[in-house]
Length: 99
Image (cartoon, rainbow, N blue to C red; front, side, top):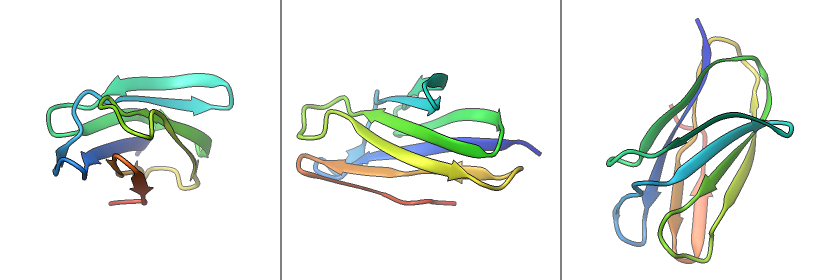
């Protein structure tokens, strides 16, 4: 069973999924995976990851105060999917570990 990372980005200011958001996954300075959210704001970013600390970097597509949101995440359990939603609006953002 592989360890994976997925996300769901929602534009809470508009009340809709955030389409076309560039998302990057780094381990240290190494880019491990990159992708763009689909029409529903979802992205299955990477699979077969080793347990480690990673940086998840979001680049929201719509003009907002947050042009980049970076989260450091610890993938501490092998064989799990780590789902990391991001809710972003013109002047706030929040994230959590989803399921």
